Length: 150
Figure 1 (tube, rainbow, N blue to C red):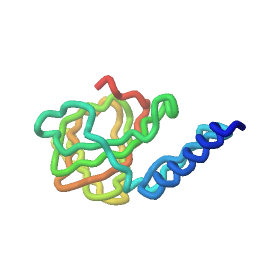
Figure 2: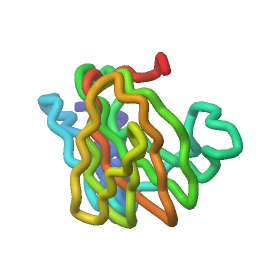
Figure 3: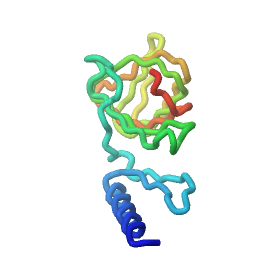
């Protein structure tokens, strides 16, 4: 291994350790197995939601934890919502694990609520409304992974 490759590997490991301190993803690189570990998921920082939800959808943030190349079948990430709601029709199956706060899912005139430690399953093609009366942070898994055609 030449000096450049050694330096790159050291930098990669240091960055992974720093990320793990704040919450981050450590991916197996040598030999590449595809296995990854998510550290301190509650402290992972999200980005503003990538779709325009209008005024009602302000305060929505998410972070996909893996690319489609890394996880072509499952979408995996963290979403955070603050005093907001927005309508959504899922084109995929979704499982949400609530890390903090309360998540309300409105469907057919009813509300299904989940709080810290609860899991909510939402089947494909469900027209729902995601609601955070105050605040919620949840971990999600979708199948299939590519839901960008919303």
